[in-house]
Image (cartoon, rainbow, N blue to C red; front, side, top):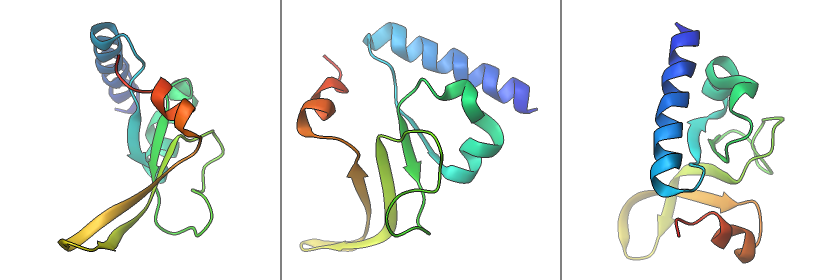
Length: 99
């Protein structure tokens, strides 16, 4: 059920946060977040996978990372790669790293 899923995700996130001393990032696609996680997880940083928009992911809550493509090309890599954007500057990024 959705309630049980949210409980288990909360348990996992708490274990990770207690171990590393930093709040973990939730990686999910936008529709899954809206349908299953919702505002109960808004205090966690979000890495949103959403390929249909050109300028930003279609989600109301703040996001930290946006995976906007899964078909990117990079010189020297022969398969397609994910393209991601960080919604902040280098100082904000460093604050999210495990100490």
